[in-house]
Length: 227
Image (cartoon, rainbow, N blue to C red; front, side, top):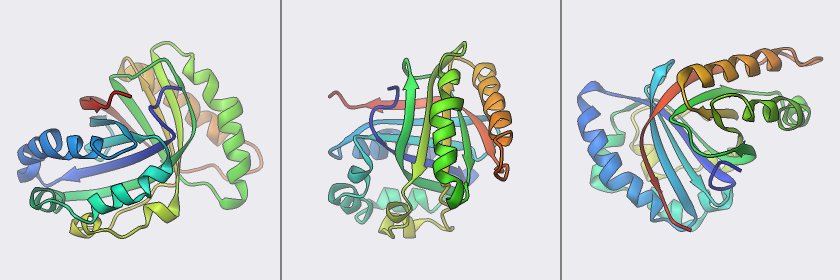
């Protein structure tokens, strides 16, 4: 397993231009350390787009999804600091999903992360999950330059919990249902794996081809908690 746990918070967003410098200070010095101080959180990473959008992708890894719907995290979300309230008001085009990790395989962390966001009809969810976990994702984990391949499925109930921090954002928050993360050594490596997966997903028989939103990000900052 390449991810640090079975729960993940996946967040994409843009920023107002005038908020960028303060965002970096806040995210590096307050927000990420605060999140890693919550019991069950294991690792936080921030990436910046090199292809596609939005500009930022933030990934937090936790022991399981129950940590992400638990009292400690929700209390933090309902008690944002003044700095948090000020910065998150500058977020734009936000997507945020609290996820259960359905598949994770790899040898470590990559400096580049390809993200794919899509939705699957409920009637096709089990078949599509099985195809991804059994047939489509395992070969990608062994490709040149690939450090990890992950399938994260949104927990709708936890993702939709209203908190003070969510209300501090100026825009509504989208919740992607199905998320594939491919991390590796270079933009070229993750792009090639993503293109292969996209073709395979669209070729799955007897189901509608999903509309896939693909972006590629480069690692900016990371913080881990020792076990």
